[in-house]
Length: 316
Ligand code: TXA
Ligand code: MG
Image 1: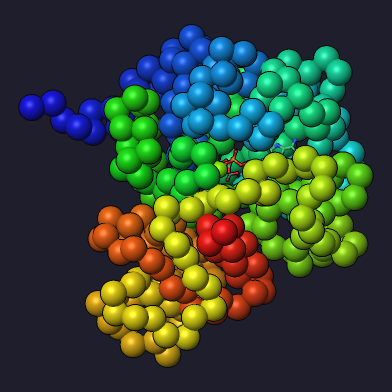
Image 2 (image 1 turned 180 degrees about the horizontal axis):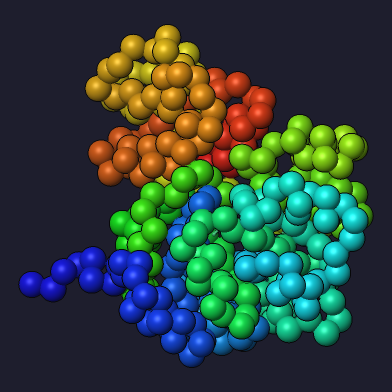
């Protein structure tokens, strides 16, 4: 019998060469990053980008993040200012995406950016993706490797659940952070479009201005942040103190008893640990057959802001 996971490739030099070949031929592939797994393709290739949108069933007006190895690669495509350099120096490579202005002669395919004049750029930290990016002479357009509006994958078998054997996955183990990057808009009014593990406070310290999380967007700034998103496909109810036995109860902190239906994000009340467990729990709970999820109150500070953001959108 054929191994159902035969499309999951171990990380070694032979497979790295194989993946580079696929990408050079406008193919797409699922790749590990420190936040979540992504579905990557050549950002300069119309064919590759089109495939990404098709496979994800993604709304064409939702732009992709472009992943670079370093600044000298990125400078060819985007205009960078002093604020950018300040945050870049502090947080990159790492789990943050910067929205910056696109150059007129940028080679990034307009469809990758939903025809906007801006681009989301990220410099991931994960060692495997960096090894790959270093060997490519193009950046990777890479949304999270899930079907649109679903839960982002944090390990190869999650990716398999999304796309079965349709697309190869490079095995980088479990994503260290477990939720998507912070999206920081640096064009016009500086603000956070998607909260993440890098918090508003950390960014305020560097830029020395107050950083708001963007209220509901009226223009299409970050379309992905408008609709229902990150949903495990069953109803989620937030800020619950108790939960009926028949539903899954996602808790936080040591005061909650361990019961068959409880899933504790962090007994130590550590918000980073909670973020890392969130999508893993969503998938486990769905697999166990629960029909509803109740979630206890999560402190809305630091990384908790990102957790509550995902819970809110998943519960819409
Ligand atoms: O951690 C991450 O960011 C992962 C990994 C794979 O890098 N990627 C990811 O991509 O989460 P995606 O496509 O699932 O989410 C990208 C978000 C969307 O909400 C999109 O609207 C926003 O970034 N975005 C991208 N380019 C933008 C732009 N030019 N202006 C405003 N928002 C943008
Ligand atoms: Mg996504």
